[in-house]
Length: 119
Ligand code: HEM
Image 1 (tube, rainbow, N blue to C red):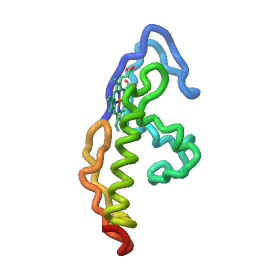
Image 2 (image 1 turned 30 degrees about the vertical axis):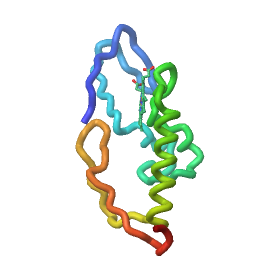
Image 3 (image 1 turned 90 degrees about the vertical axis):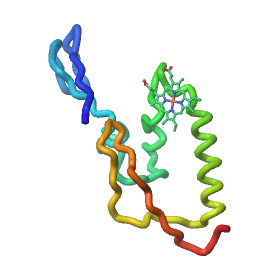
């Protein structure tokens, strides 16, 4: 799924591709963070990948998400609590179903305990 925009008023070149004024451009938001030229093995969740630090999940530039500090804090607390409660967890499926929307969010994320650690 993509958002269609019109290129105007001038011709532009983005990443070596020439786009002429008047061309229709399809913007595929779900491709953000999936550029193999930037993110090695982009479809894998590799939190320690060096380039992961430069993800676009909170946008960039002057419209960088104002709530990103709060969102990161909430996520830290949630993951820490989850790890304390469940111990080591891993994926319980080899197939992840996604919603077919602009953001490709997961329909569910089945997990299983890998160790007896946790409450
Ligand atoms: C995981 C949670 C969140 C994600 C993934 C997220 C993602 C984003 C993204 C991608 C943008 C940029 C949109 C653009 O470029 O047009 C944005 C902007 C924004 N976000 Fe978030 N956001 C999150 C949580 C929050 C929270 C908790 C708040 C406020 C408490 C917040 C407030 C804002 C505001 C005010 C903007 C507009 C900034 C601007 O245009 O200058 N966000 N967010």
